[in-house]
Image 1 (cartoon, helix red, strand yellow):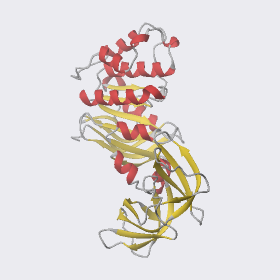
Image 2 (cartoon, helix red, strand yellow):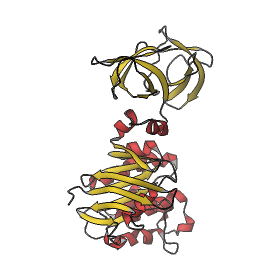
Image 3 (spheres, helix red, strand yellow):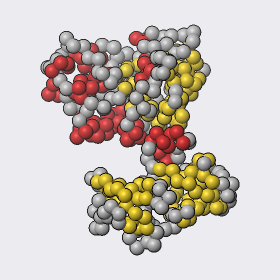
Image 4 (cartoon, helix red, strand yellow):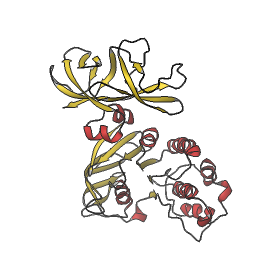
Length: 358
């Protein structure tokens, strides 16, 4: 039997013909790991959580938790016997219970996890002290979401499943709560699976991130690799962190590989996917890959500029019609206007050259 904390083997998760994910293979090796499942809405992420929790049956494959099969085509352990807590996106609070009673309901189902966390600490972390005597209809959607999360945490499960746990929380409070919840989960060593459509949330909260597209788990890796080394055009396009440009492989044999772009010139770095010299490929250019340099002879026209607080995102146009995004710190003295020429450091050096066949 598996020695991993949680293992999904060739799992098919089905809610409907459109809402399903097939042939999922996923491993959580150690207790206390946090993983995120990232994908567009309606793709089947919540269906995976509901199936792990026992609220739906597995269509095919196996789910093994702590060495025990809890779901397969022949076996279905009932939800109350799994010690798995699922916090729904729509909160599912008991309408006739006050907030404090909803939270305390979670205490009644705790069974065996030796975590030392107490309800009072969770209430403070989630900033819900002021609403404990209110009923669910008297609080906001964001507050209700935090109460639902508190109820799941006090139940001290073996596995915590969070469905879009921060989606209704005000932006001003969201990041603080995310940081605090992650610290708490790590301190009490609580294994957690988070479903989200927010890549920032998926990357910042998790030890590993799974990308679900087209009814498949496309990539499962540490967040840094998912961002910098997407394994397919589909994943790169979904993350929408850059653009693809057409380049030719000039040298793929040396330690530092060389590509050539008609206008940008030579681009150096390390190819993640090996292509023979002379190959025409698509290179992923992300906003952080290009470096602004007013003194450079390589200049492109500014066609758009967006202020993002700490930085600007400039969009530069090549003569062939490619639009390239570039980050520039917002304190930079020279703020370029549309139609101005914008200098780029040349030659361009990128640590990871993410390329796919043209």
